[in-house]
Length: 216
Ligand code: C5P
Image 1 (tube, rainbow, N blue to C red):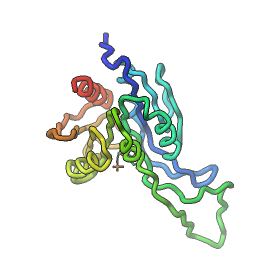
Image 2: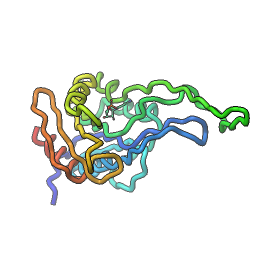
Image 3: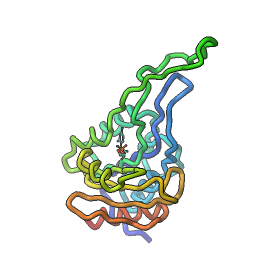
Image 4: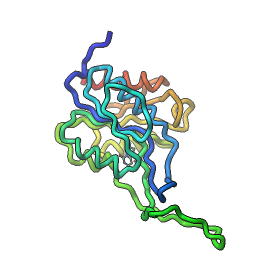
């Protein structure tokens, strides 16, 4: 039996790595499994939230509105269309920092005379920063995956992205990287001391996070 403590709350979770098109058959992607975001969505659902998952990865989660996207641009559009109406945003997606400037209409052919092929990239928008800069009542949660200076970098993100909370993890630590079922989180909140959690499953991280949110 779970107390439905998020009943009436509208939550959006983003999950997975974005795929940035090169041509109709190729893309630039990353190794994000989407597991952390899916766990966040599942636990929020179990706590009674009205939940929309904007995801690049497949999921069989039920009783959740699922919006499948590929690119950062699509993810941002779907989120912006709904941001006004929600209470909480959990931005767990691994958004590509860059995308190809041009997307070819047809499959790019290799040229027998050229051994080097260059793709020019341009910066993607920072979805979290863009959306959170317009926030009124929404509680906004970001992630920070770092390999060094975890706390300093995560503190910077808390401020620069206008987030209420950053869940930071050192992805070079055992059990806290991409594609594993566990995570080791430090929760950063404005005007509060960082709170380091032990290594736990991503579902337990989600339970601990939503417990934190409910007790705010
Ligand atoms: O700057 P960095 O990529 O480390 O920030 C991570 C946080 O920002 C995550 O919550 C991620 O979903 C979000 N992000 C974003 N748009 C980007 C890059 C990151 O929303 N272009």
